Every structure is written in structure tokens, then in C-alpha cells.
Length: 121
Image (cartoon, rainbow, N blue to C red; front, side, top):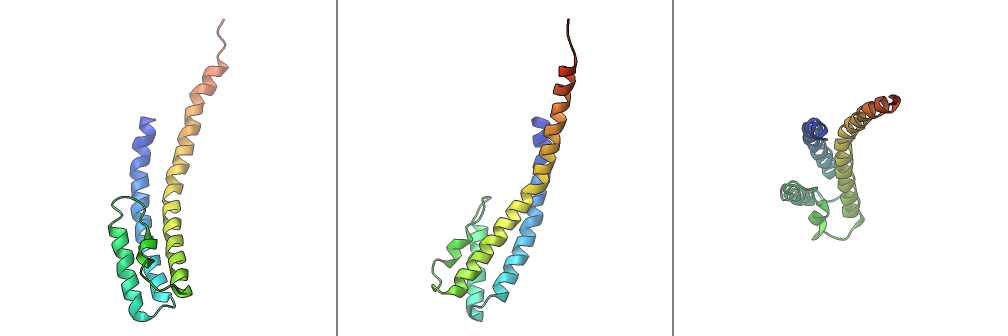
């Protein structure tokens, strides 16, 4: 277990950092490509960045950035797209560490399988 944690922690944190950058670029592109008015794009981008900065090590809640925005389909579509990008980034960050964890679990089965093959009389 300890070896697994020692191996997985740096891989997971590196994946989170890498996917954070990808999510920021995808989020910026989503805001720029959205159908909301140009000046509102700046306000939304600033509010989303504030939500990201205030997350303090937790998954940020970008929905808060839309609390004071008009209840229009363009804003709802952008909100859904940003939440989707965030979910995609977090999910992608877990994929490589989970694969390594599965490999370690299989390796842990080797001694068990070998000990079952021994017959004591």
C-alpha cells in the first residue's frame, strides 16, 4: 500500500497540473466562442477565474460564476460547457494513476498465487 501511494501521488499531481492547463485553455476557448455579448465575456472569464482561484485545492465550482448572470440560453450553454470541460479534466487526471493502481493490484496477486501453489504436508 505504501509503495503504491508513493508511486501514485506524484503521477496523480502531475496529471492534475497538466490537465489544469488544458482545462484553462479549453475554458478560455469556450468563453471566447460563446454567443454571449463581448463585454459580458470578460466578466464571465473574470468570475470563472475567481472561482478557480478560490477553490483552494478542491474541485472548483464554476457554476458560482453564473449566479448573477442573466437567465438566458447562451449563458446556460456556456455554463454547461465549462462544467463539462472541468469534469473532463478531472476524469482524465485520474485515468493514468488508476491504470497504475490496477497494475499494482495485479502484482500484489502474484505472491498470493504463488503461495497457493505450495502444498504443505
